[in-house]
Image (cartoon, rainbow, N blue to C red; front, side, top):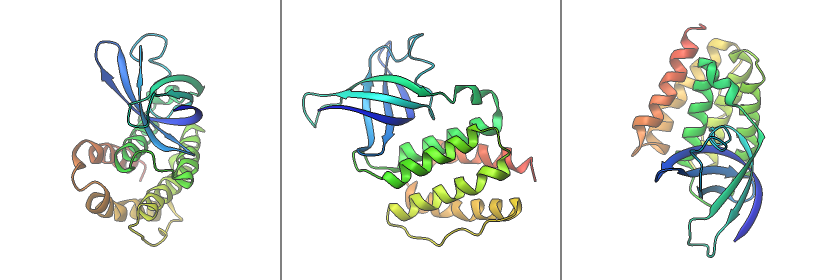
Length: 198
């Protein structure tokens, strides 16, 4: 397997002394996990920030082997980590996506939607301008994974927050039933940040 694809980095977990296991979403191949040698080093650490758009080269001897990855940065969202609300929104969307999607199953609509939400968060627009997109993304994940659901009612900031709150039990029950802890904590941090704007 030798691939070169654009990918949104969702997570990077330490592995050994200097490497990481990266989980990234691609349009054509879905969620892929890969070994990145030197991923904790000075050169790659700023590249391997969740939410960053990467040019990802993957190589493996067989489909069953964890591929080796060489990432190159296409678009950084690292500057947003200093803004609590943007950091919480990116943290939630990337952790949620990394947790609920099965590996190597393409979800092109989810790739496009996640990219759009991250771009909106990174644009510097106020939360009331991108929160509806985040709610729509959560709803799309539920639909694409087979749990249906009506389109959320959004409009005013208060209505969008109410729609976000209505999705929480559905996400917890259907998608995160066995792994709620850390992932739902990321959503709670985002909700706390948003409540300061009400």
